[in-house]
Image 1 (cartoon, rainbow, N blue to C red):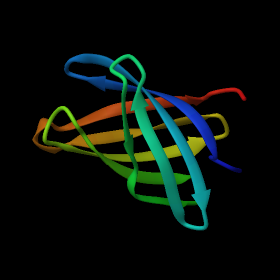
Image 2 (image 1 turned 135 degrees about the vertical axis):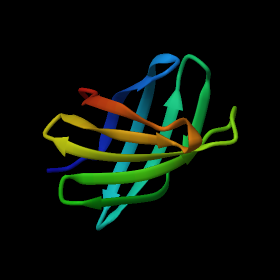
Image 3 (image 1 turned 45 degrees about the vertical axis):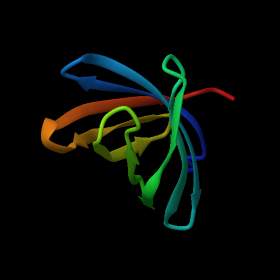
Length: 101
């Protein structure tokens, strides 16, 4: 199953539900792409992205706050679920849906 494409993610943070768009491409065991927040007009590249079967992991450095977000997700067809670790702020549930092309 390919994870390539666009995904809409929802992060259940203490500041409420945060919506982001993930655009990814898998090449072997490497995951590349960008994460963006269209409302805030912010986009950042994925760092240290990996894919192992249905398990994905990547990091993004926040531009507005000095924190790196570390995502660990599991894909099941057109959905994904997992956690994001936001430094000293803790871990938050994250879920996503593939954006139809």
